[in-house]
Length: 356
Image (tube, rainbow, N blue to C red; front, side):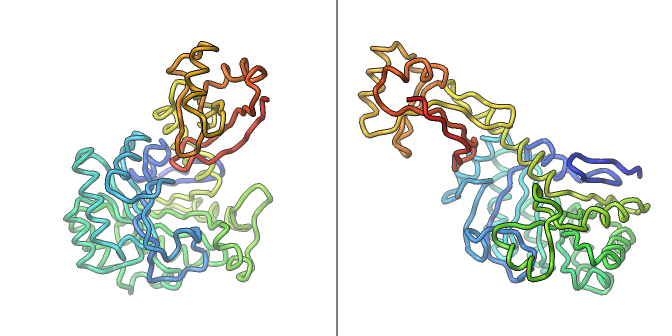
């Protein structure tokens, strides 16, 4: 298996699993099924909004009903879902319900993969019965050098016997290189399909814990941990019996997330919104409480086409094609702006420029 260089400093030796290929395309929805987890990993990057809280998100969309999950999947034209947490097996019945929901709505070919630290045999059987395609075991660092004698042996064998694709997904902890090598050797000998090494990274939530453990960011423009890249390259230069993939934090943000966001933007953009090369949306806005009369006034006085403007009641604003608002803003006598936003459910604003 040849060594392939990936964008943003990543590497892979061997064919990537389906879940990773769909992430590359931006067509994999991230389904966060619960923040509950029985483990307390110091490197966990999950936000304070989610960590140890029993909440559900589909990408950036807070889920309160099943239709929210389906709406987000349609919005990005998803071909699959990566199910994560917390630990999805701490809410296994909910997880199975979502797998069935997605398969029923989008067909058996809709690919689902899942991350877990659990080795519970009954729960693994439930996942397989629900239709899960791929399970990624998050082996705790303390077991990397002795996975061959752990419960992950029986769990991985059971999952394979039930027809699941089985792999390992863990953070690359730079000072644990020897243990990582032992783990990959075991995975190859066991016949597992892949080992994904994620660049360990800083987040707002884990920053204090990472600093206490002595980690530093590799440079000011990256959240990745200093020292991970050379270890990854040494590991990937070896020949292995299974696929080994090093996925960097830069790749997740600069490629996977960007691809998904751009895919969503192209699918949800309305006629008055401009999609940028980065997948953000640019639009003109007028804010206030008199929006319906204002909309009628713009249509009659300024001949603004009805399909090039629309009301956003939740944010109390009227959205207009930016090229139109730029032309008429000086004569409106009220504040007008062009904003750039993410096309995600939370509509995070990136930039705002005042026109008048």
